[in-house]
Each structure stands twice: as structure tokens, then as C-alpha cells.
Image (cartoon, rainbow, N blue to C red; front, side, top):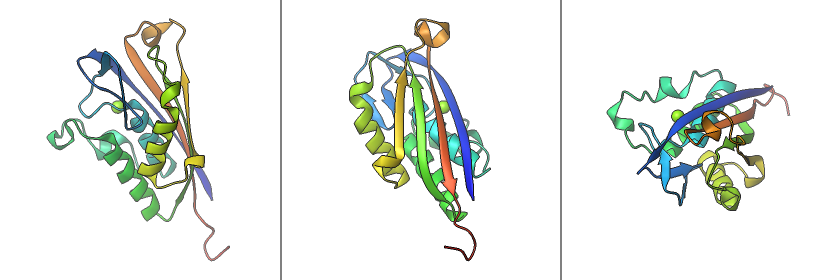
Amino acid sequence: MIRTGLGWDAHRLAYGRPLILGGISIPCSFGLEGHSDADILLHAITDALLGAAALGDIGMHFPDSDPQWKGADSAVFLAHAAKLVRERGDRIVNVDSTVILERPRLKDFRQAIRESIARALSIDLDCVSVKFKTAEGVGPVGKGESAEAQAIVTIERPAAGGQ
Ligand code: MG
């Protein structure tokens, strides 16, 4: 059985914070506001994974009111979601994702981000896609007030007793 899950996240830009996307630190004069490391991409992928398995959302598993998650490395959230999915007997098939951020240009970080996500999920690099868009100056992302990420994850449960 094949199932898919959808994830989305948005955080405000904040000066004096590190910009961390997909577990990779991007050299930049600003970062993203948030209780954890504010990694929108890993948050969207974590939500997509949880969604595919109907296991709730990231806020349910890692509430931002919990001091234990202050400044947390979001790879911990993603790895935990992957563990929950595998415990159900599901295999993670692939991840596709998009980061929407006006600047800086991210294409030079694509490979490092893909490798980081593949590592956190223990899946092949070939199964991880990351795309980058700008908002062309429109809306809060376009005006440089926030950044967004979207993700879709496919999981598969081998047929019971089957091949
Ligand atoms: Mg978030």
C-alpha cells in the first residue's frame, strides 16, 4: 500500500539568527525565528512524514512550549518521525520538497541539503529532491519577511505475506 503525506511550514526572517535549511547552515546575514533551530525545510518534511502515516503533526510530537526543544536540531524531529513510520512497518520511498525564499540563492547548497536529509532519513540520496523558488517580490516571502517550505513524502507498506 502506497500512502503520501503533505507538509508546509513558514517562519519569519530574523536578523542575528542562523539560517539553517535542511540541516545545513547557510552563510547569511539573517536566519529564521523559532523555538527550535527554525529549519522550515526539515519541519515541512517531518510533517509530511507524519501525515503519510496519519500520526498527527510536528507540534503534537514536539510542542514549542517544551523547553527541551529550545534551539533543538530539527534533524532530531525528522529522525524521530522516520522511526515512528518504520515502526508501523512502512518504508520511506521518496521525498520531494520546495523552499520559497527571496534570498540568498540556495542552488549551491542543494547537494549538501539533499545529503543531510537522506542521512537523517536513512534513505538513498536519489530518493530526496529539494527545489528552490523565490516569490518574485510578492507577499510576505517576496518582501523578505518570511520563508516557506513545502514537502511531500511517499511511504509504502509491503503487502502482508506478499512479495
Ligand atoms: Mg516550523
